[in-house]
Length: 537
Length: 77
Image 1 (cartoon, rainbow over the protein chains, first blue to last red):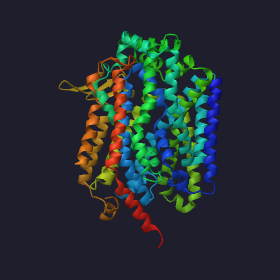
Image 2: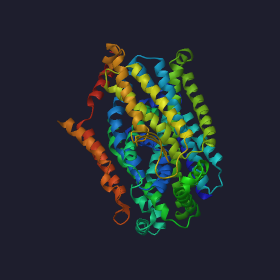
Image 3: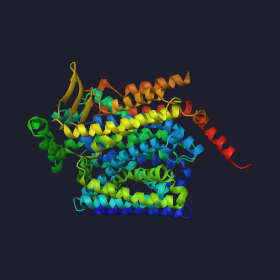
Image 4: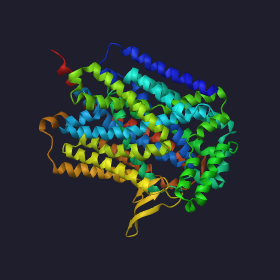
């Protein structure tokens, strides 16, 4: 129970930081202060909070779990591609959005889109799609909280209670502290989980008697494929470089870009972002792979056995049994199991707090949704004018409570693993929305109808992929089930992990078709007025 | 010329991400790090260096100037 107590202390600290931020803001019931911390964040807080808000439960739990079952490919798939694409988009898009926010007072991406393309209800539609896609991200945080507390306490704290506790703590400091509280907590959390990777690597490495023997043993075993990428298609690997395009299109990241006091603060963020990713992901992926050499943890042996049965007998099983085995082989808790086995109790608690820090990154998403609702809906449709700014802030706070309760209710029922849920819906959807930003900021010829086409297409594609995967059961590990082929070319396939279109993940055609639609529809429709264009170009 | 070189550098790094040359190798660097993982670790360091180049040689300082000008115009005389 000691590790769980350390984690509870951590949660209390985080709550205190949020309340402290609230006291700092007392008497300033202004929307810009609550939702954007008065655009005043300094360089240190800006770097760590922006990075921290992008690192969710899967940065530690999902990455090690994915690496346990898929090998070192996990790092190349998500981490190193993000290390290039995300800072690049912050450099190109984040800085421009910051400048526009300072000049014209925008607080959300939709406010900018409405102004840039002279639209009203199309903006509301973009808000709706963004909001729907953001909710899974919030759910991930709560699921991660439940999983982590359950694992840290060795099953003493049930999943429902852990999830509820995390939801309550996050809701409280976002409710009271707004953006200032969220940014401070994120900074504290980022420092914690940056330290986590190195500490976990050292402790577990020492416990395992060094990694050399484990790595050599794995190289000479039937599991040597985990040290390579031989089971992953190069098309699949390439597809993943499209996923990090989602980061800048996530409203919470773009809204965070508006909080910097000066544009110079982006410099450190852009340069250090790839190194921060390296510091967290490399140890977690490595440990996830090495966990396969641990033979004295029964849960790990059970996961390996489920994976083996799935690989050897999966083809002849019914889909329900396959899903059951997939669930059993799911390894989001593998790093917790390693800590239990190798770390002393007090250190397991500290490291557990580091994991909680990553898990609780859903705070920014909750705040972003609240900002979007109050600015893009409440204020836009006259609420601010009729009831005043203080009521607008209170509405935002009420929204925070409602969205957290909703996310918690869903988290109790959602059966998917953290990693799959995030990737399949939110990330692909937001990546497909990224052409909106590029067109708004870099192409004079883009129009609101082009933006509408992108939004409708994104919604359609996300639903289509979800329905397809619900209707067609996932095959056993190995070659995909080809659903539609044309002249010998596989057009649409159901893979063990999702869907493939011409061998690529759906995110590739989703982004390319989005860009194409923006281009074609904009060419055919009327441009905004010269006055508006002069504000942007 | 500077901009073209930077665009080429970004494109080159993007292509280098698809490292087909270590695809099937299970060689262990320093006796314990799989070479595919080591390569992508170095790739992350290279991405950071590239970002430093972008920030140093292609920083959009005109945006800062525009913000300053707008602020001065908005201030009461």
